[in-house]
Length: 330
Image (cartoon, rainbow, N blue to C red):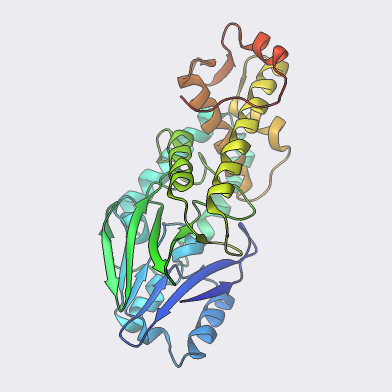
């Protein structure tokens, strides 16, 4: 297996594609984005092994985001490769017009609910439209949680980990006698993957993502190969760190409500993240919403649909707390 680092200046650092080429089949996990520079980098990396796009037999995608599936269509067009992705993301990866229309409608509904200003909506929608009009889409074969795929001496097992995306999946396998995982954007070494904004189709996004992290802690993988940046040598520790981070963020959300009084998601986002640009106009309020929604279901926050306020007694609990963290498990 070879990790191929592919440039990405817009998201969580350089993307990774993973190549298996044992002589029987050539298999990729993720492809990077659709940009010409990325295409050249992936072609050059394959060429080092005497391979090209036409030699790729199968592609496994961790999820629908364009920085992970952007070249799948081009590769399939040259090679006829099978492209596999979770069923929840299949229609988006294939470019289904109805699926994309439903996504856009839901995004706009949330933008209004969150209190996102109209000019910010315009900037964001223009930004998001760039990739959708340039990506060549593949025909995909959907998979479900727990399915296994074999090629050569390798067996991949699908672990569905929704939160950041509805179909986000990891792939477990054995490498050199150790159980490892290709974690996509479920587990990253530097950033905490966005929940709430990155895929507005996900109901209860923070709850689902926390469950995925708890699963990584329990699995005790020897290593995680993430969708961005360098390998993670202690995945359980990194997953626990992100859980702790979300407890700290929940405390900050509650503190913002305590200081501002009843307010909308956009106000909480501004308190947490300040002014936002580009795709972060989506990620900031999306993350804030994921926490507010989670806290509302726990009974810690009360909402009228657009504005949130602290439930009775929570302000006193915040004032009495010795640490700036709030339990997010229930």
